[in-house]
Amino acid sequence: MTDPLRKKLTLTVINTMSVNTTVWDTEIRGFCARRQKGPAITYTVKTRVQGAIRWLRIGKHGYADGHPEGHIWTPETARKQAIRLLADPTLADKAPPPPVDSTRFDVVADQFLATHGAKKKPRTLEEYARLIRLYLKPAFGDRPIAAIDRPAVYAAHVQWQEHKRAANHALAVLSKLMSWAEDQGLRPEGSNPCLKIDRYEENHRERYLTVDELGRLGAALDQAEADGIASLPAIAAIRLLIVTGARLSEILTLEWGYIDFERQIAFLPDSKTGKKPLSLNSAAVDILTSLPRLDGNPFVIPGHVTGQRLINIQKPWRRIRALAGLDALRIHDLRHTFASHAVASGASLPIIGRQLGHRQPVTTQRYAHLADDPVRQMTETTGQKIMDAMRRKHVAS
Image 1 (cartoon, rainbow, N blue to C red):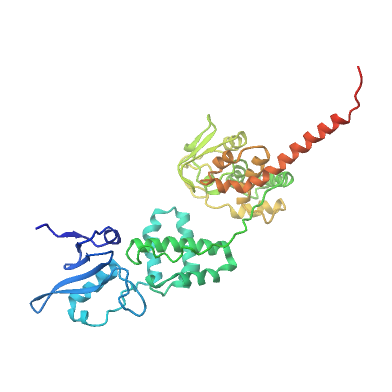
Image 2 (image 1 turned 135 degrees about the vertical axis):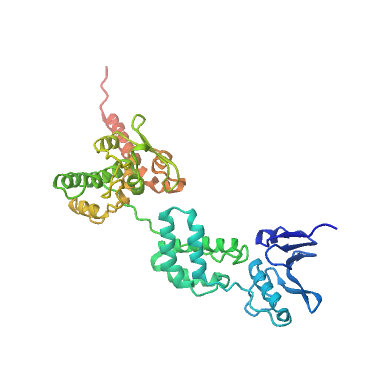
């Protein structure tokens, strides 16, 4: 006689059970899942009642078993019911309680942030927490996690439509949370209610500085430096953003040890898209070599606290852009400006994407239309030269 198969019952175990198999749970004595003929798997608990062995049926995996609310059995909900039956076997003769996991969404959301969130970068985790607080908890907070269905998610997404970009991001976070809940046995596998819900089309705001505007910004930076309107580290950070196309976080966390001046490259160990080499042009090298290195501080852009980096440049940025008469300009627009001028200079989109650290080519593709300007200028100049040549009167020799 072969030894009984013992494993902790999880969705993975359930989904790999073969016909004529019984798997005994290692956490609850007597609790098991049985698959006989066909795909159906039944949760059961074996116990002794008044001296006799009894098999107390819990229900079929993924079936409501007549419950009016249509909830389903999963390894976790069936395990909880097994504990109830072991405590009181007479419950097996009564109408089954709702097998839905009654854990509220807001509780699961907090667990999600504490466990899955630990794998994310701090800024990503901060954004997850913000979207959960502002959008997801108000919509689903008091509902059982297993009772949230696609119509409920669709209705919430419609309510958020005034802020389309945030609505799409909230839906994406909710989808990740629901998939995580499936992995934890809180929802059946493949039940993500966010699937097949169309996202809103977003109007990406892209602002590029013209040559004249760049001149005004440069003059404002010079004035801010001369008059002490902003600190030298903040001014240097802005200048580096303009000439490299780097992200703000990449410049503020840049350390001297990352920079190879001979090869004119900074090896960033961590960025939004992971490890990234940042090419440094002569303008960037000039800015960097003009900065002092502070003893005990590894950062290129030092902060106000000894040994620490500058955390935020929003206040000096607002003062500088006001000097330039560019009040609506965002720091991120400097990155767009670098890309737009790179395209105008004839650089290819893949090369631009590598410098910007785009993981997906489609992200860089947004700048493709800008290539029309240099092409148009080239065709205009060439066409004019051809027409000039054709208009010359032929002089016979």
